[in-house]
Length: 229
Length: 229
DNA sequence: AGCGCGAAGATTGTCAGACAATCTGACATT
DNA sequence: AATGTCAGATTGTCTGACAATCTTCGCGCT
Image (cartoon, rainbow over the protein chains, first blue to last red):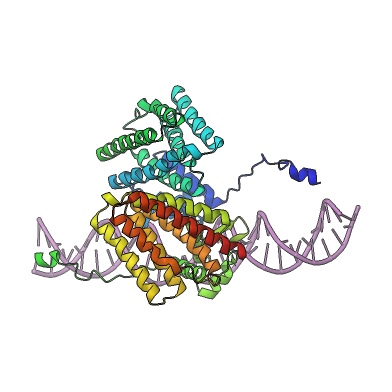
C-alpha cells in the first residue's frame, strides 16, 4: 500500500475533459473569433447564438460573461456584448507590457531551471518546424506566441505566465483582424534562434536588447496592418 | 459656450453608479470577503445568497462567475463556488510577480511624466496621513497597496496597472484572513518615504534594491501569519 | 423639404419555476 | 473491509416570461 503512494500516481496520464456546456460555448466563440469568422465589433446576440448552438439563453449569457472577463469581448449596459475592437493604442500597450514580462523572463535565464530552459528550446523548435512544414497562418501565430510565453516561463512565476497569456489573447484578437493582409510576417522568424543563442552565451544584456528590438518591430507591423483596415 | 468647454467639465465630479444587479451582488460579496465576514473556503451557496439578497439564482450565478474570474473564489464542477484559500505558495508567487511589475515602475521613474510622479507622492501622502489619523486596519491596507499600484503607474501602461491590481486583490484576500492577527504591520510604514526619496535622487538601483527588500519582508510576514491559521 | 417626436420592434436584464445530473454521506450487502 | 445502493442537497441547464431600454422608422410640424 505504501509502495503505491511512493510511485507516480497510477493513472497520472489519464485526463478527462470536464466540459460544461458553458465552457464549450465559450470555446466555440473563442474559436470563431480567432478564426476570423467574427469581425471585431460584431454584436454577439444572445438569442441568435443560443438558437444556433442549441442551448438556452442563460447558458450563452454565462459564456459571454466569461469572454468579457477574458477581454475578448466588451459589454455595454443594455446594449449587449460585442467582439472587442483592438485599438492601435491597445497594441502599443500590450507590447510595452510584454516587454516588461518577457524582459523579466530573459533576465531570469541564469537562475532558471533546466526544465524551464528546455521548454524555451522546445517551443522554438516547434515553431521552426511549423514554418518548415508550411503550416497554416494561425498555427504559426500559435507557435510563435507560445515561444514568447515560454520566455516568461523562465521566471518560474505562474502568475506572470498567466498575465502573458492574457496579453497574448489580445494579440491573437488583433492578429485575427489582419490575418488576410500579412501572411508573410514570419519570414524573419528564425531570428528567434539568435535570441536563444545569446541567452545560451549568457549575454543577458544582448538578449534583452534583442528582445526590445523584436517587440518594437512587431508593434509597428501590427499597428500598420491595423490602420489599413 | 466655448468658455464652458475650456473649463473643467461642469459636472465632472458627478458619478452615477451604473449598478446592474449582478454588479451590486458581486460588490457585496467582495465586501463581505475583504471584511473578513466570509472565511476562506466558505462555500457560496447560490440559493442562500439569492434568498439573502432578494435576487434570483441566475443573477447570483453570474455574480459568482465574475468573482471566480477575478480569482476571489474558485469553482469546482458540480461542487459549487467557494471563497478562494490563499496558499503560502500563492503569496510567494504574488510577491515575485509584484517585484517584476513594481520594479518596472521604479525603473521608469526617470522617464515617467510629472503627473505620474505626483500620483506616487499623493498616494504616499494619503497613506501616511491615514496612519497619523489612526485609521482602520482595512483602510491602511487600502492606502498602502494603492501606493504600490501607483509605482506600477510610473510605467504608463494601463495593462500593467491592471495586472498589479489583480495581484493586489489576491493580497487583500490573504490579508483578510490574517487581519485580526497582525494589526501592527504598519509600524515601519514610513520606510516608503525613503523609497520615494531614493527615486527623487535618481538613485534607481538603490530604490530597486530597497523594493526587493521591502517585498521580501512583506512576503515572510504574510506567509508567517498565514501559517499560524 | 427638413427636423424633431412618438410608437413599434428588438434586445437585454432579471425573474420564477422546473428538472436532470452529480455529489455527499449513511446504510445495507457481500 | 470493500462495495453497492439510496435519500437529500446542490449545481447545471432549460423553458417561459416580463419590464426596461435601445433602435428604427414613419409621421406630423415648421
